Image (cartoon, rainbow, N blue to C red; front, top):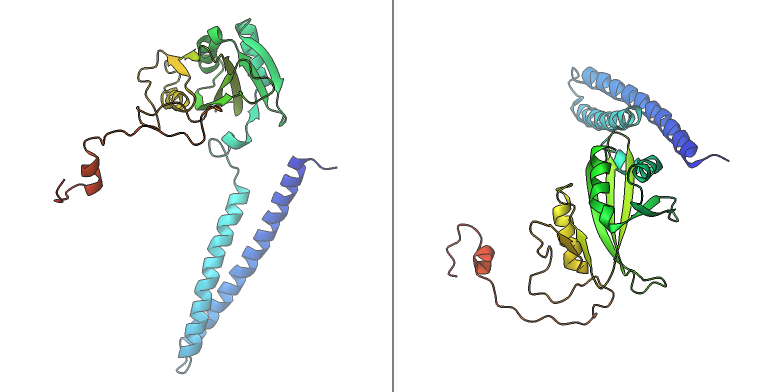
Length: 265
């Protein structure tokens, strides 16, 4: 039985052959239409037929351009960084090196149901491990981070998980790390000093889950206003909860009026 990659390669090859055949046929038809149009241009009574054939030639030319673009798309390989973020594999080699470089940093390693490799990182090793992954292993691209509230899961101690997603452009590999955070002390060291892209991501996690990041230069809410009470992605946040009314901030009406408006404020 053929593998998934063999089936994709077969479909790719057959589609390329089909497009090349259509391209040749449409090109020949376009050339024939052009020759007939030129022949009718000298005839005194060929005005209508000339317009018909000229319009047909234009349509055929557009079809040639589209088929040529599709054929080139199939012939030319797609190279990073355009496809690597979706096609990259999970790096076991990076986890092996991190485990040997920082003994005790990885509490657990496992595969999820999709086959992706994960590592649970000890809190005290988080920043040294992120720095090692970036500077020594080449995982310089901070894709994103997120959190999970495990309150309603069968195993919910510690309550929170904070997830880090890194990527290596050179190796075309992903690295997924996880840190467990206790409900009584939902605090982690900030990764902003290693990855500047973690600035807003940590603000989003703080805003929605209430996990603080020590050393963050500006830990404010990312999406909600500062007077908002609670953190809406926690599983114990009330679905029909009401927030206190806040006074309207200055500058709101000017923003709605727009620049250059002479409407009274």
